Length: 165
Image: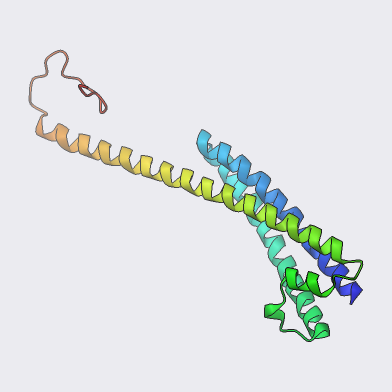
């Protein structure tokens, strides 16, 4: 049983490392979105996809280990959480390692969620701004066709955002 727990801790630490890398990339992504650097955004997205692929393979292995632990403990694998497992092995040496990696995973995943939510809002704002700009340009083009033959006097050339306050 201790071997399975140690194997689980190892795979969780590997997954934690992947999530840490994703957190760093998400922070970089925020800067890239703000700077509107689409090439760098594409590179970051490719790196994220690579890490996510690695993590998916690790997740399959983690689920297999959990299934094996659940069989030994006579539990349903779907109901065996890290917290429950920690309670069940409270008197074993692996307890502190499992608790530590569980807490670090939770903190990292919470931080990653916050970063990703912020990036999603930035991307939505960018898309909204692009849509607004396109609509303004279309609107301007349509209005120009109605006034094409009108003589312009000095001071008639106002931009999109010129307005009397």
